[in-house]
Image 1 (tube, rainbow, N blue to C red):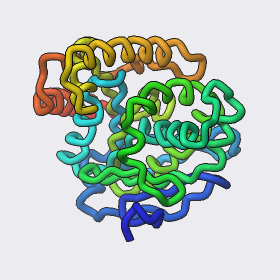
Image 2: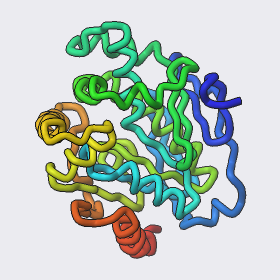
Image 3: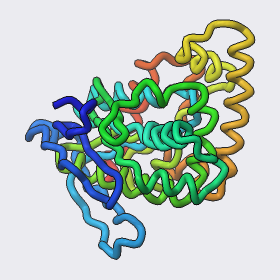
Length: 283
């Protein structure tokens, strides 16, 4: 069945209330386990009392602000390496969408935390068809609206929401490592979610370029639209960089690339070139 009906299929992990994983992702095959293998310790979710374990596989952590190109670049890296792909931002957007739909005050941390606690997210990790569903309903389009974009930073700043989603993200990573590995993108991947990832990337770009890219994603072309998006990006950058819980920052040891004047293939090529050296040094 498709992810739209809420049932899990290969490359799909369901996570949510009661900390259940509804379906374990199927392994992709022996050929993927041979792609850049390395041992990556995966921390146990906070409060579980479970010791970290070390499966075999590769984690590529890609961080950066909105409009830096990290989604497009991450998916292409995953395709080239035969890895799975996780957009952690989509998970925060999904919780935000639910909160807005239910008219929850996003400035009320307790109310937002309760939304996250009661919501079941089903995440598809196929880089060609990434998807996310809320309680069985696909929300790929709904989470990309301007309203969600402008509200997601407030939701992502709630430490209880972050703790819950980070635990879910680590579960998805652990399952994907058994099948060869995963490219994970977000704002705290290399620093919090997967700090031991052998490959860490931090993408950036000028605010002007990022605003133009984001406006195009929203289907907007006017000068006023771009200016509005520019102001919104500046506001979100400030919120994400100064929040108390897991702020946006450059992870230690990350490859830092400015994508302002680079094409997607050029960024991916540079990441892979520098990654080979990093992986050679990985025990």
